[in-house]
Image (cartoon, rainbow over all chains, first blue to last red; front, side, top):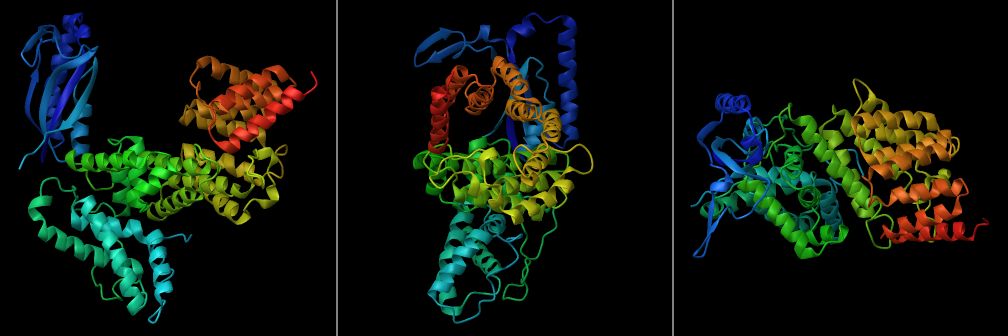
Length: 113
Length: 439
């Protein structure tokens, strides 16, 4: 098994304006996702949601600036670190990952040594 | 080219062959057996670069050995055994170095391992698995960019050098080298498995493979730039890979469709330009010079590719090509049937290029005005803005309608989008005709 990061990139404004119903659906989708991953034979090592990019602070050199490095419509809003057999398996998991206001990016974790 | 690269032609030359015979046999084995040898060696090497090195070494060793001892009965098995031994040695030597990102080999072969003809007769008693499908599905994995899929297929499946691939695609050699290296790195770093996809994924994954092979063919068929209309080497490679797939996946209808399409198109190769190298359109081609045996082979595949369920896009294109191939003349072509096939094609593949071709067929079935109206709609949709064949097709229909001014403008638009010398010459000639025509 190898580790992959599933980065969830979505339109933040869609969340800001979402109804409680929609947010509830999103929560349920993520709960369901955990079960589905297990069914594929994969494993979620960790999964977290991030506060929106309006709360981000960037540092380059010694300079501290308000906001993210790059302002984009779709930003990373959360991630899952998963274990999968290979890229096809990781992509199968990535396809199951809820991201109704955007999509996900699947990246292998670098192994040292 | 033989139906199966494994059919072992060129074997059994026997001892006493000279250097010339040996080098011819090595060249032949390079063309026929490269994919088989590399695919089987990659499984042992666990690394595509190591596998390539070992296979290259094996071909170099073959030249010496075959000159001295004669060409073996089964050159492919000889090369595979030699390359695999080298791979095992290399792996032993470099265990630490290569342990980092090995090629991910699936232990259970989803397709039955096949014994190459002649194996077991020679000194090799081992069963060499036919891993060519794994190799091509790995090269054409959707996680790789299309241009990387194409480059890897030419490099690993066809055994072309980076220089040759760069020349074929008019790309600088370092650019092509970087593209190949990046793709190989992604295969190992992201763990793209060396395997044939599971049945559920197979239709999509196979479509990617067929798209790459077709792209090889069309790139060779009409070179994107340069002086020659056809780049024969690329065309032959595409036909070779299509035949290989047909042998390895005999039950896949779209594989039959792709091979049929390529054969039926390629049967017209000799007539696509006049002796001066000028482009000749289908209507002006000398049909008596079309390769009838190639047409027969392609046509025979079509009913098979079409049967059972909704036909795929390659089968439908092959059916269209077959109708053209069978028609006694351009005018006597079954245009209504071709329009109907294009309708079916648009349902499975809603491409504006297909819609443009349908418009041309419609113009033949119902008159230029009907075709022109369709092209007008496509133009308005704006999805074919940089596509040189749109203004070219439009210009032709305007010319047929005697609308010289508008035709001239469309020919100029087409010229502005075309780099291929033969195509430019054709368009310029037509432009002169319409500007000189009486108004």
